[in-house]
Length: 434
Image (tube, rainbow, N blue to C red; front, top):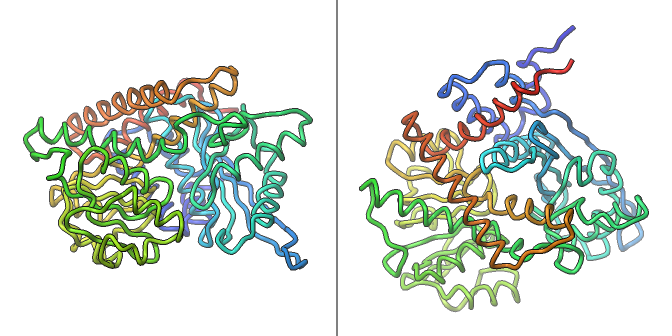
């Protein structure tokens, strides 16, 4: 007896808002482009999911078991690709939604990769270094049968960084008996990482903002210049938000507000981002920074700005607060920071949205470069990496704008149409087995 798509999409996957939003965005794109319904049916649900228990011995000698996930959404175009998230709210449904977005992102920017995602439900701030290493290594062991350079290549995400990738690579390599640097990306340079990888997502956000400004000026919809007249706010100050803020500051923009989950800081004249980064590195919080006044996340969302960069987690801009949002451009540095209904309201008001699958694709693009460099044992300079990153995003932005104008739709739908169109052609060519 076959299982209907309704029962699949309304079952274990359909519990997180992010997954529901991803499916809704897919169907909006599918309806707009008149996608083959059989292809849409297959793209609604992941290809494969692995749920594992991850037991470790804590520093006090007790055993604790954590929940771990790895979801592979679609691998028509190549091996799976997607980060590993350590966060207290990680769930199977959220991981599935993020894997789906990775599928569309990799397809959109022309990579020979599919979409995957993984995570552990844990608060990483409560782990010692030894506990974090034990958790990462045990998780790698539990999912090792479905990852590999030609199967599925993890990377860092929220709550993880290059150290975790080095531990994953070492664990996988120990089990194989030889070094396998291509099993993960986002590694430290010393163990096969790529120059420019750590900054790539935030830098890519800024590249897409530059393209958006050029496009809006060309079409006469806005008149913006990236200089001291441009007012910018950044929500989230991790690997993405901090680099995006710094790169906008370097270009002369006035970054007036930055916030993390504990609160933020505001300075009408503009924050000194290098000094703020030093403060954050020392204190692990923005709170108390002497170069600005305290500001809540809610207040920051309501600031009148030219560019807002939500670069923390999903579901930040919702029906409850979208009426207060006052930005000309919103660059989705995070995955799914705007809910679908809020997105529709913003687009109706004329806000230009740079969608997540385009805006934050810099990370996966340079991850692809790292993967290729590792397979070839030939490495590029940081200048070469950034030039190639800029070229890929330039082409992708142009294609999304072309779809936007062709279908007279919003940028989010246009980006998904571009990604889904490539998938559609590949899936039809490969057919359905058996």
